[in-house]
Image (cartoon, rainbow, N blue to C red):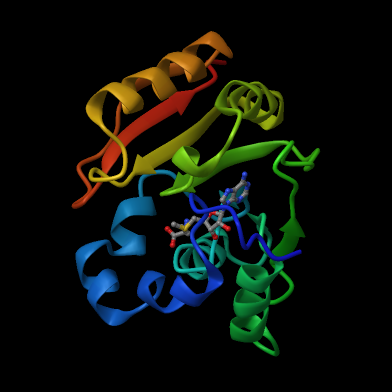
Length: 187
Ligand SMILES: C[S@@+](CC[C@H](N)C(=O)[O-])C[C@H]1O[C@@H](n2cnc3c(N)ncnc32)[C@H](O)[C@@H]1O
């Protein structure tokens, strides 16, 4: 499905700006994700786009782990599919096209990354409730939002919705060009 009229959704034509060497230098996926991902984990890259973070996540979970790469747009998932085809990462990455109304994954997850996507989700409250139901006890969610698109107030409101859904929320790591928060479920 093509989301032509939905201005707030990052278009597939912008995929190149999401995966390039300059971004890798500014927002190094390995450095950002190192504290949260261990070999063997089940993790999700929600709103994965062309897979800038997904590829590194798949390397980090290693052979026994799984990465659910979830996006609304088939075109984004197609770009990721082309990158992993015939590589050792292909078996570890499960591509899933979700709907605006829900994630639609029923696995239990150790970690979820939601990078530059929550402001594009139309019903954040429902999103956080669904997320809470699939993150394991003791699991973690890292949210990063772009500072220019998302005001301080809007980010605080978003975190309030996460708390309402039952997450504990604290300040996230320092990531350039991002407002971040870490959500946890408690044991
Ligand atoms: C700005 S891009 C960020 C991509 C990736 N997380 C990154 O940082 O490189 C936002 C992505 O979220 C996806 N997206 C938007 N709304 C979504 C939703 N409700 N559910 C899943 N994905 C969504 C878009 O299709 C797009 O690929």
